Image 1 (tube, rainbow over the protein chains, first blue to last red):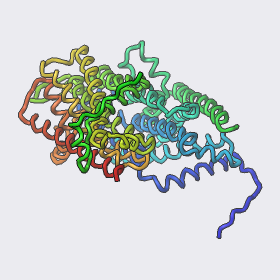
Image 2: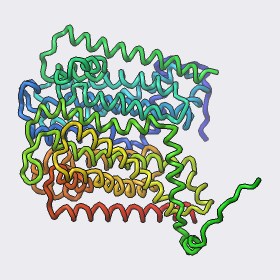
Image 3: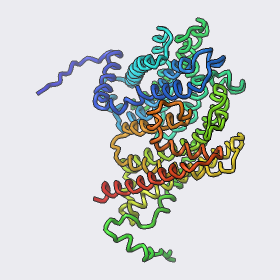
Image 4: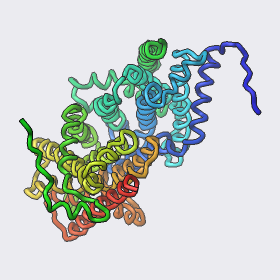
Length: 268
Length: 276
């Protein structure tokens, strides 16, 4: 019979987050098939439909920077796919940790703090984003979607943008006490318009000036700019730094608010 | 003072005591319930109208600038927005109906045990099936009217046949709600909704919604033509441009058959799972 020995030691923050990742991994090992689609297949399907199918109707021109539409859209599809996946993984699953599955409440009974719990959740989402991004880059290379090795940089860009979108949604989930109807509103009023209008499929210069600021304040646009810059070059260091700073600020603000709510909800 | 309660009409008795006891003519009770529920979540309800509008707008300002012209039905040359709008109308009817018939039904079925409660009243499984599918269809119908109105405002309605877009959307909603609900009864965990997405998104992307059938290589064209949404898109695009074709009868029959099959399967599944 296996015995459990108490070490009497409180684990450090990194180890604590890693233990949460391990917990997620145990679950994932059993159910990974049902998430294959959202984490790997969906961006590839969009690439096939928009890059190849719709792209066959597009003449390369000024709007696409003289590139074929497949080349134009491939880096941004990785970023918008990461965004969608990260938001999805941070909404109902996080609310469920508090409300339905209640595993967050169970974890709070261990020495792991709510902040470490949040960190573990983000780390787990980040690792899955990384996996999805690598799979996407590999499959997209079979489509001939990449021009040079700079594309390897879009993997961290995708993961970073995803995390920047995940943190605020986790904050929202942690402060949600109903059945999560507000997520439907977030998907419809934030995620969907952002996917369409933040420069993934067409440059935001086609959007009237009065509405263009909406694209500027969306994390996705900053991610898209960085990804295109990494894939084709042509992005100056200063704007690039600005985009990174914006994403970092969104991530930080999201983490701080989420942390507040995690403590408020889990520490009695 | 006593309130009078009407006793159930005797006509329904035969149907009620028949061995499967599937149907008792109380569909309206389910519809009433759905309306009551959504009157409290009107924001979610109303936002469903906006979603296809965002798409339409994106195609007007963005995608349409990338593509000048597309070959529509009968070789007619269309602007990209007018090519894509009817297809968006039916795919939003599909998405809305499937969403209602799967997420909503799963929750009521597995978690809140709503149908079990209903079946302990004279409501039968066929009532539940028709009532839930009926609500999804009503909702889809309302959305498609709103969508059609916006198309008209944007000047995308050019043929009187286009009025038939609304019934086409309702038929698509009916077929997909019925099939979706039948599938939802098989789901065990919310993570399995991925499988529904796995069927929906490719259908949405590849049913000639965004680009014509001729883009595909020959063998793939046959595959695409088997997809249910393709038939809805073809019907809608035909009516929107006013190019009618005898094959439209085939598309309609396909969708009707799907609707009937789905309603039958749903009633059967609910009966098997909850009445035994």
